[in-house]
Length: 178
Image (cartoon, rainbow, N blue to C red; front, side, top):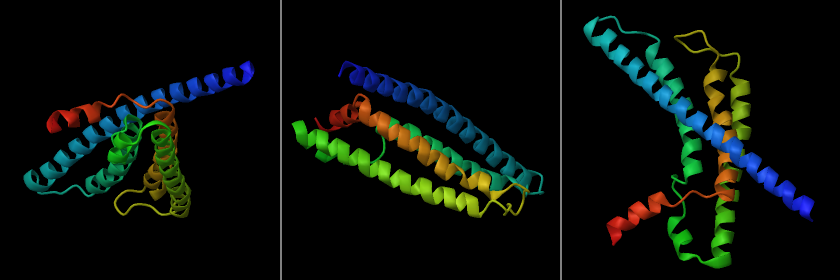
């Protein structure tokens, strides 16, 4: 019995440590990608309106980087509990109903992300031989963001269930309703 509890604590600690590291990395990469996208947008405007020679590759790269940015940002949002959720039901539910509702939300989100992972892998595999119109890079690199983000999101869902963050958003919202 004590060995099983030790293993559970060790597994929980491992999941939360891995999640903490991956969430920080996802946040850093997503913010860096957002900065790169902004710079590319500025370059696109500069080449089009100032130099009168529009860049043919920047818009394509910006769109593909935005997919990665959104999927990595989703991981951070899931972990922090900042995605749209069943807030009212969670606030009203008490005791075992609250715990059951949290489990249901976690399982539904996990299932949705597992579906995205499955179809995202299939999509990335099917487009692996196609390349973008303006750059000679496989489309699989862009579409790989979908299963990659879904897999990290699944870990974030488990970590959020095991260790929910303090309700910062809930407290901020209550200051406007009081």
